[in-house]
Length: 123
Image 1 (tube, one colour):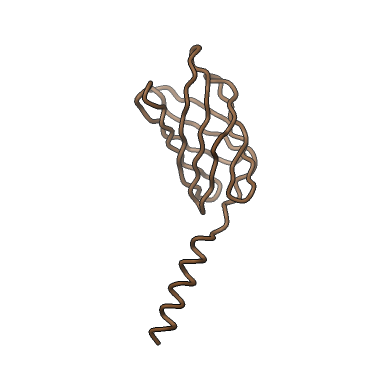
Image 2 (cartoon, rainbow, N blue to C red; image 1 turned 60 degrees about the vertical axis):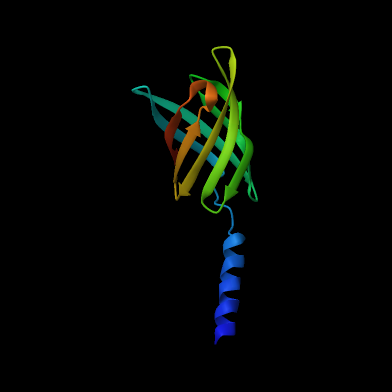
């Protein structure tokens, strides 16, 4: 009996570790509050296994390439480097996928010292 419980536990752990990446490939539109103003950003995600690539565009920061992207089950993370008023700004995004919604928090780096919460919807 104990042996079957141990084997079931090991199998469950293996299956959890190899959970397939969520299928988020395609275009997503996001909104966030930044200093009391609503801002928008479009994300075009490409997924290859657990690797995430693509690009993102906003009126404020223009187009940026998604780098270091990973999907682990329903968790997502990536970085972008944007041009903000002539300065290079590296931003780190982390979040959770839930169906056709992604909730992201972006760390604007030490220069800005703040985070922004985004809600993305599949288009």
